Length: 216
Ligand SMILES: Cc1cc2nc3c(=O)[nH]c(=O)nc-3n(C[C@H](O)[C@H](O)[C@H](O)COP(=O)(O)O)c2cc1C
Image 1 (cartoon, helix red, strand yellow):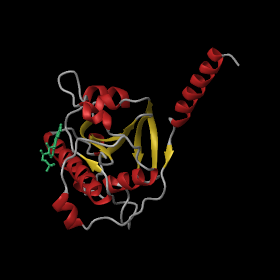
Image 2: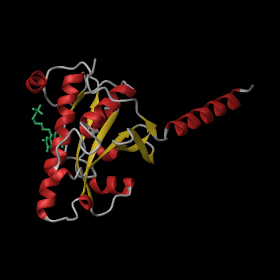
Image 3: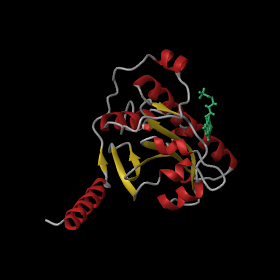
Image 4: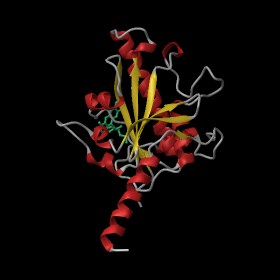
C-alpha cells in the first residue's frame, strides 16, 4: 500500500468515525442516589472554575449532570428544578466537540440538533468572547421557551430568567458535589446559537455552563 493511499484511507476512516459519533445519544439511567457531597458541603465549597481538564465527561456523569439540571424527579410531571407555574420552559442543550443536542428528560435522550463543534458560539460573540470555554469538553446552554408561557411579556421574561437560574444553580451545586467543575455564564453568541439550533423569536438562549473535570 503506498503512503498517500494509506493516509487518505486513514482520513476517510477518521471522518466517518466523527460522522458516526454525531447522532442521538441514549443516556444511561441517571443515578438519583449517587454518592456525592452533602448539600451543605457543596454550598460551602461551590465556586466558579474557568480551567478544565481536556478529558471527556463519562456518559454516566453526562446523564447525571443533565438529570440534576432539569431531569424528571418525583414523577413524570415534575423536574429537579422548580419552574414558575410548573411550566418547565427551560430547554437544555449540550454543546460538545461532535454536535449540539437537546436534552429530552422524559426519554433520557440527547437529541442531535446540529453537527460539528459549535462551542465557539457558547464562548461568545464578536464583541466579547471567553476562550476558556473551548477547554471544557462540553457546555450546557439554557434556553427560555416563551411558547410554554404563552407570553413574551416582561413578567414571562422575569420568570424565565429566574427558572434558568434555578437550572444553572442545580448544575453548579451538582458539579461541586460530584467532582466536576463549572461556571454559570451569560456571555454567548445569542443570535448565532438561535440560528444554529433553529430557535424561533420566542426562544431565548439566556445562560450557559461549561462543564469538565478539574484541570490536573
Ligand atoms: C447570571 C450570571 C452571569 C454570569 N456571567 C458570567 C460570564 O459571562 N462569564 C464569566 O466568566 N462568569 C460569569 N458569571 C460568574 C460570576 O462572575 C461568578 O459567579 C461570581 O464572580 C462569583 O464567583 P463564584 O461563582 O466563584 O462564587 C456569571 C454569574 C451569573 C450568576
